[in-house]
Image (cartoon, rainbow, N blue to C red; front, side, top):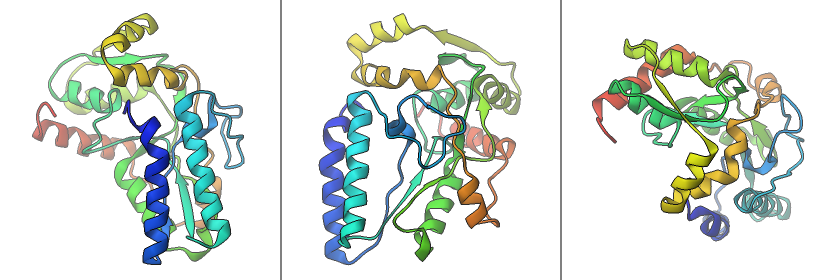
Length: 239
């Protein structure tokens, strides 16, 4: 995580070049880093690309590369814009850590406000949406928000996960100062500090355009997705 700010741009250049050489189309999932702190709730696809930190600006630059490749005709590109993800194999520090802690009866470490609502997407739904967009000719040349079934506050998610585990919620709140101290020794935590606003402010995507274009697409209910994810973390131990 601490290295992608340096590597993401050249990686994207290589992906574009490979797709062009192969004559392939490109589905390039993006995240909300490009927006910086949300200026509107819910955010539509025309939200300003107002990232303020170095990694967010790298994401803006890579989106520019993708859009120019599409406009030039070098590669046809579609960008599904995804919020934070959770699910089997998703080992992120906070969402993955939450499922890991609940699965083993431990307290989850959580940073930021737990009452603000944020879009959250199950990884299998993200994959299905990417496949759907990639197979839709008219989707290319655009960004599409895929926000999940509804925005959730962290407290709602935490209660849901621990309920599925058959345990009362246990949360250890991590302060900004603690993160800064951890960041001295852990480069991934230091890199996360750029985006800590995402856990302090609402971050809700407007998915109406995707819903109107694909009315048959159904998101997995959070309760079902949580149970499947928790079962995976129990099976795979301290991953």
